[in-house]
Amino acid sequence: MSRRFVQLSQEQLAQWLARPLGDLDSAVVMIDGIHFRDRVILLALGIDAQGHKHVLGLREGSTEATRVVASLLSDLIDRGLDAQRMRLWVIDGGKALRKAIQQTFGATALIQRCQEHKRRNVVEHLPEELHASVKRALKDAWSASDADLGRKQLSRLAASLQSKHPGAAASLREGLEESLTVQTLGITGALQRTLRTTNPIENLNGSVAHYCRSVKRWGDGQMVLRWVASALSDAQAARLQADAQPDQGARCSPRHSRRRRDLKGRVASQPRSRHPPRFNRARDIARQLGWRLIAAAEADRRRVRAGR
Image (cartoon, rainbow, N blue to C red; front, side):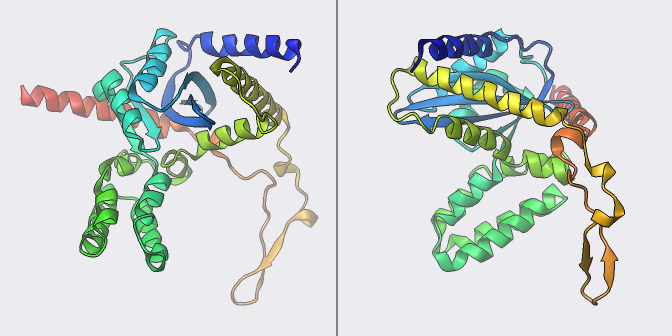
């Protein structure tokens, strides 16, 4: 490994760890871990009111323990993250993550458990012949526009599994409410599909793993952090380059429009943009999410006053 790479990656790491966060209004934060042999790098990804993603911080540890997560969260606050702001936290369901978030942010933290991780956990307790039907039932419940309906469907599913598969029923009931947080807030459409899982941060983790794939022997934790910081800088540069490219979809001529046949055999013109709407570019997260978090905070304050 060249000394120049070590120096540059060390500078990139210092920039990531010291970047002020006071100017970022992150309505959503996702946290996940990247595993490197016997080490874990915790990564925090923020999504602002315009839908742009920002890497907020890194923390190295041997496990995703509560103290490691709390150390990461404390660092974010020290660098300017507003601890009093209502915020949605999307996590994979790890108890250490949840405990640290609640201890640090209290009632201002709204937690969304990743539905994909929950689905895997439930299915792992079941025989293969039940996988398809249970996955279908979970999908229907989590796709319901009304949180109460989704809650009833999940409760019925847990009751149906209780007798023969109590492990699956217990797994489903554990954190059931937090798997419906986005629906409870009334968020729908593409925004709901984005925020109900940790896929956005796992995609970033996949980019980091791909960048580091050539490393066969990891040294100390500082080496791991340097490589991760370098990978994040590379991913950010690629994203900025992609965003800078002009949208060609609006210039598609009629002769390039795709055609497909409907079920009755009639030919219908179906122009399709080369750049379909994406969460990053076209979703008004401030309107759909920001005001709902404010409304939830106000509702909590009213309940506290009523209790007094």
